[in-house]
Image (cartoon, rainbow, N blue to C red; front, side, top):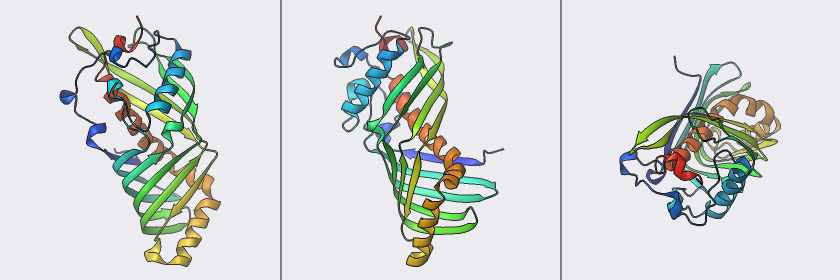
Length: 256
């Protein structure tokens, strides 16, 4: 049975390349990245922040790190079919996810010598995260019907997050590589701001009232959309980690 929260994600080709097209690299070629020891979570937090802040806007090929500011998606589809107070199909195209380079990792758990038994968890926050692009919407949210096609700007204010994943292990040329299997993201913003243009066939009055309604009832709106948005962000994180782990053997990421 399909999940009531359905998410479709299509990313740019250079962000989701197939494994056969990837060159296996040695992280020592990324000379300005500190290699931490297994399980040294304080070092992992510092290094992760430095890489994201320094290379978020440019990417860093030597470390298989993509451009994440903005993180560009061709399409992002979110739907919720549970019924109840929300039954919505929300489709985005030409999407920019902004704000990821401002991440503040606060804590890491695991990343031990044995990846088969280790935990892999990251916790932190962002000043803001913005989802911006073209949208189409059709359905119902809380008590009101909603329909439109135009520009969308959804801002998550100061979201706290956690990322947890479990890898499968693949042996290649005598080395262990990680394949990200199950990955979960939790997002808890302090508030969200929504702006959707051209609702209800461009009716300015109805559009203005709906945007006001969405922002005044942001907590209830977020409670309904949160599971689907978290799945979408998890897919982005999974793509980033998969790209890196397919290029580097697990032990080669760390200092011996």
